[in-house]
Amino acid sequence: MKTQGYLEPVSTKTQELPDSTLSTRRRAGGLKKANRWWAIGALGLIGPAALYFWPGNAETADASTRRTARVERRTLQRTVIATGVIRPVVGAEINVGSRISGTVVHLSVAVGDRVEVGELLAELDRTALEAAVDQARADLALVKPRLDLAESTLERRRALVASGLMSNEELDVALRDVAVETAQLQASEARLRSALIVLGYTRITAPIAGVVADVTTREGETVAADFSAPTFVTLVDLDRLEVLAYVDETDIGRVFVGQPATFTVDTYAGVEFSAKVTAIQPKAEIQGSVVNYVVRLEFDRGEGFVLRPEMTAHGRLLVEQREDALAVPRRALRRSEGRQYVVVRRAEQWVEQDVRTGWRSGSFVEILSGLAEGDTLELNPN
Image 1: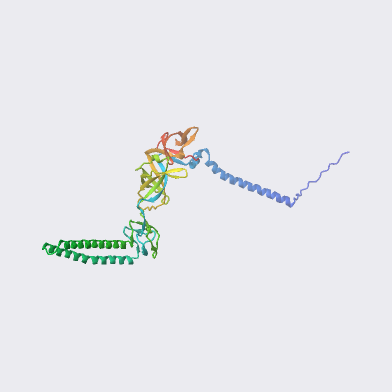
Image 2 (image 1 turned 90 degrees about the vertical axis):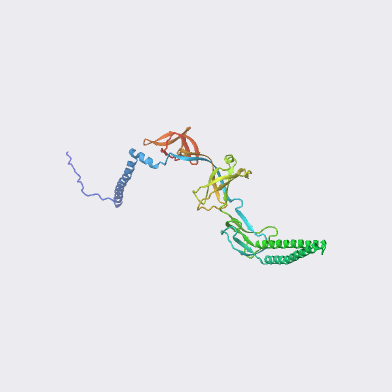
């Protein structure tokens, strides 16, 4: 029996999907588009960088990161390092006081004022001392007539003795009177000079030229000079200063009088002052277990610079000097397995070059062989 074929009709109707499924597919499609744009952007950034670091440009990139220096000729020095302090020389700092007691009636200076020799600093009350001068003058005025009378009496008695009308004893009395009155006159004159001198002590004047560093009294104060001279002001001559440099005992054997030196102070950064050793104190100063010797340096402060006492000085005492030496920065030297070498540019390439060194001075070292003036070196990044 023949079976009749049966064909199921094909539906042309589109299958509807749930809303959640459609939303997920739309998001997936958006992410794919975004990823394509990110990939294009990344290629745009990587491309130029790849071209820059391509083998043909490797030398340019490398050269831009190298720190270099040239081989040059310099003056190299061996020095002794010493830290010190600026102080006034002997006689450049003076405490000015009064030699007599009295009341301060006038004080004419203040801290920081510059004074010249003989300029008035202060003045004491003069009333009692002026009276003493007047008394001395009056005493002198009384003695002079008595001396004149004694001298005239002596002349008359000499004449009478010569004519035989008076004895020699009377002449001797007249001679004695003249001698006594002469001595009285001299004593009166000395008392007057002394009174004038003491009166002059009421004016306190500057014994040196300098700057007023301190004032320790005020107008109206009464000072007493019975046991010691009271200090009124302190003067410092800023033109007469020196450096007291403290040199370690291990270096003092290389220091000598007349040795040239330089020093700097913090207030004038980068300015070097020339100096010279004038003395080495024989007695050491010991602080803890450190032994230092004080070396005195005289210096020229130059124009436009004001140095003051107690400033810290960073000194260098010249021991030896080598001029026109071929030198490189210490940072250019490298060491490896007993070798000492530098990296130098030769024929557009950086190559290692063994060197032999000599003097070391500060941040530079002398090159005895292996390099020529003008060579370009790479500084050691380490």
